[in-house]
Amino acid sequence: MTTSLTIRKATLEDLTALQLLAKETFFETFAGANTEEDMRKYMTENFSDAKMTAELTNPNSQFFIAWEGDIPLGYLKVNAGEAQTELQDETSLEIERIYVKSAYHGKKVGQVLYEKALETAQLENKAYLWLGVWEENPKAIRFYEKNGFVAFDKHIFKFGEDEQTDVMMKKILR
Image (cartoon, rainbow, N blue to C red; front, side, top):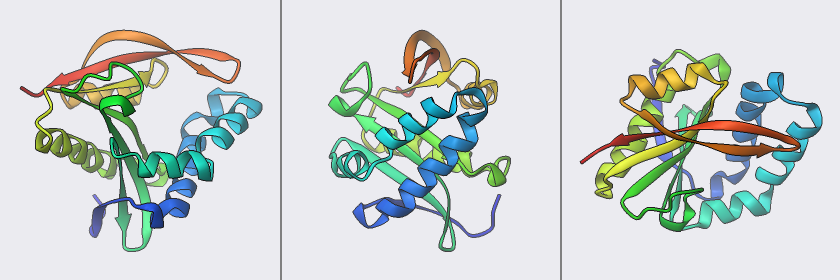
């Protein structure tokens, strides 16, 4: 693990850093498996000023950034209530995103971000955590399985013109 890692809740003041981090980590994760056009469309729509400002100011969503000094290494987005992409169960917390710069993979940054999601769910007295993960991302699936998640369903994630299958996973907390 990096020696001076800190996790801080993101605010509007972090918008630019969060956008850059989101674009970089999303591109690193998915560019090799998707068309340039689909990547550009997704990143333009989902990481725009308007969309990310709305997400950052939604009281049911929280972003956390992992920092090493003043360098952002990765981030977490969790959703409760109506901000959840599916389920929208008041007793659950969704992990919508955990992304870490590829140069920091294997250095426990993702684990620390996941632990922040778990802590958030426990503080909010949620019954379970859930998420969707692309079926063609075995590294992420193994990460969540290692942390006690089990698959419970699948759904289609439309990525540009491509329909991709996400494995839906959950971890019961109480």
